[in-house]
Figure 1 (tube, rainbow, N blue to C red):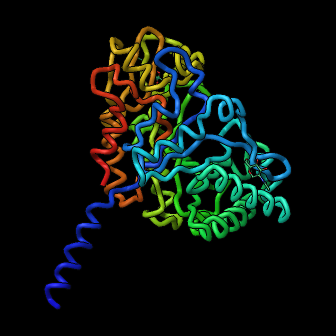
Figure 2: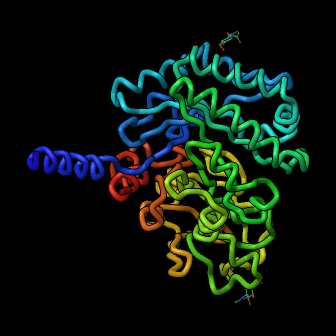
Figure 3: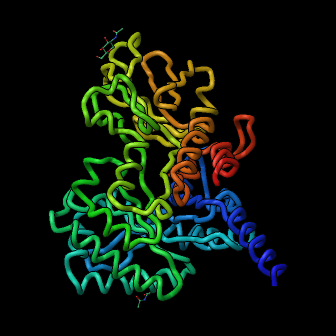
Length: 383
Ligand SMILES: *[C@@H]1O[C@H](CO)[C@@H](O)[C@H](O)[C@H]1NC(C)=O
Ligand SMILES: *[C@@H]1O[C@H](CO)[C@@H](O)[C@H](O)[C@H]1NC(C)=O
């Protein structure tokens, strides 16, 4: 008997050690159209680096039905089946359907969430879509309730919608997650955090985009901690640690929270190239990169492949890097800052991390540290 108990104790200790945290990875379907080394397809995913793979994105129709945003990508390029085939290399991989994103806006979600009939249609459509394609769960990226065309009543309706989705999905053994804001002001507008947390299996906190070319001054898109140059109370909370602490303080269980990490960055054109300080004036976003092709945004793969000769700075307070050349200032995450952030998630006993997104890591291993240096830093650090 004592032996059996010892054996049980030993095996449960082993299980506790063996079950590392979540690594929830977004796969972005549109990156298949990027040029040259930037082109990223489902078959470029290394499914051993993630516990969950989220297909971004499907949309929502006004009548509550799931809509495929790029039909050719699924029917012509067969990407959905390529995605599902990744289970052959990692049978434990959970593949999850993600709906929404910034470009979907908020209005349709607000409309569907306030009508019992439209919510029922949406739940049925999500169940059908996930069954037909073989998804293990559903992820809702409504950006954001009560904002961007949403209404005040969204705060309550969002919880109702999540509750109905969760009951229906859990009954089929599927999970429900959501991407939520990591900005405290935005959270106050959008969420009843304790109730949101009750109605989700995983909470993916988007702990990034705190600063960017939407502001007329230099700021890092995802500092871990505040800088002494942050002056106002709001400025002091525009960082990863403060955002996560807010979710915890408002009652979200740490085990449900996945800390959102970026494999990208945001940059500026400096007004005065000699002033590269935080809060220095800017003339808009940095030049577009050749792969991500968007002003003010840059992928880590672009930074390491194309800008390795720029001046590199590490901010000891914020625990993140930036690079500068001429009037260009780019703040981003690299394997070093990602490791520090994962250690932070470990210390806070979070469920794990979420990563936006696989396509801007150095997935080809062009920069000399092997394929996926950021994802590997996560895998080696997460507990
Ligand atoms: C179920 O989903 C499939 C694939 O998207 C679609 O073709 C079919 O019309 C859906 N059926 C219902 C009843 O919604
Ligand atoms: C850089 O810009 C900041 C913000 O405007 C200002 O406070 C600081 O004095 C400037 N530094 C230099 C060296 O010009």
